[in-house]
Amino acid sequence: MSLTAEEFEKFAALLGHAVLQIQVLEETLAVHLVIVHKADAKAARRDIETMFAKASKQTLGQLSRAIQDTGKSPSDLLSRLEHFVDERNWLVHRSRLENRRDLNSDARRSQLIGRITAVADDALSLLTTFTELTEAHLIARGLDSAKFKPVPMKFTACGRVTPTKCADSTSRTGCAAAMPCACRMHYSRVCTTVDRMSARQKSDRRRDDLCAGGLRKRGQLSR
Image (tube, rainbow, N blue to C red; front, side):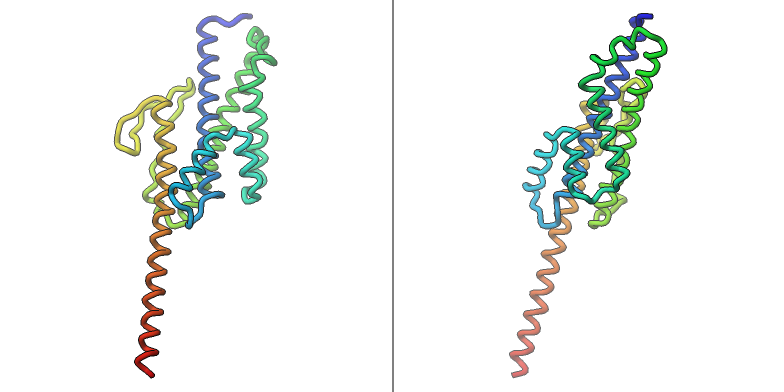
């Protein structure tokens, strides 16, 4: 049985919802790759900016392989991510060719909708897990967890984003407004951490220099 116009509109909204969740996951993985596996306390801000720019251009598969190659992520999480990459590729590249006739069958259409819904749900689950891992890493590096602010976006079942309060205290609605804000928040966090750790290292070096200077002065006076 062919879809009605209303049914097709709902199906198209579900597709858009899934794709948006995938895009947020890709951004989350790029941030995770840079913060957890690339940047360190000695990295300059401009170097981190270069890392972010490079990671943001990588595909989901490339990000997945880069994270896997570090050998530092849980194997079960990597397996979930690898399976998700296959499902993402099916949805983005092959679903229309392989499953277009399923829309004309009530039973197969239901299965297709279930599979697309699972892709969206899995994307949300993975991005939540990787966000938590990234934030745990930042806390371990010295960032105050009280300064964390929730990512200002919440997808509804139809793929829309509910209005939230952004980190810059400006009311924003819609995916185009919310997602860049989330990236800026992640970027601000890692740069703040790097800056603080750099300042701490400089403070430690100054303290060591003062101690060394004091010891030399004592040695000269005792002669």
